[in-house]
Length: 261
Image 1 (cartoon, rainbow, N blue to C red):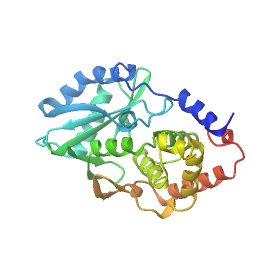
Image 2 (cartoon, one colour; image 1 turned 120 degrees about the horizontal axis):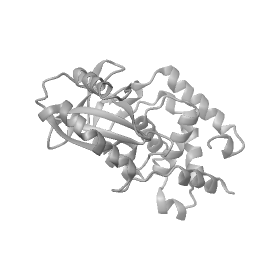
Image 3 (cartoon, helix red, strand yellow; image 1 turned 90 degrees about the horizontal axis):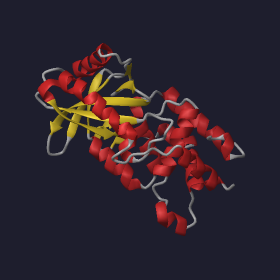
């Protein structure tokens, strides 16, 4: 089995159904009555976001992210919105996990991350989110994130790196990871063009490990929808060093089976 065949086999195993009839989409229907009562008249919409919408999800990762868009006239602060959502989820029987900008819950067999945000600009779909770890807020645009990652053509490489992250217990937020992979491969053709030029998934992932082991630790990564939102500040220097060290170890392995399974 070639390295590409090995990685493709893993990606097939980890494939997520993102179609309109995907069972995981049923989580939104289950949660909607509760979310409508919680947000009252200020709920604008709830839409799939994150890895599910970008095509970078793995079966063993979080199953779906749901972005909750609230009206700009919502009276509560962003922190109050975040905390009240967690409280309401607890009241109706869930066991919420307080993360950075999301609240994680288990809905049946599926893991769901709920991201509440207050819209700033209806035309541009900019939203304000609460960042729990820094106890502050940030402006972002989920649609811009989805478009950038989907247009990159790096879904396969991103999914392999996400599996490697999870299997090594690394703190590496998904958007930060996705943009890092895109940056590491910015001068390399993707998809069909890569095949014609002799590039490969395994070769590209190897290049990403090289980037993580060298340039990554000191590289500043910003939110493509808000350059004031420094994504690389969302983890500590210790976390970045751990990622660099794990990538260095990966480069020293002799088989892909020692790197990701």
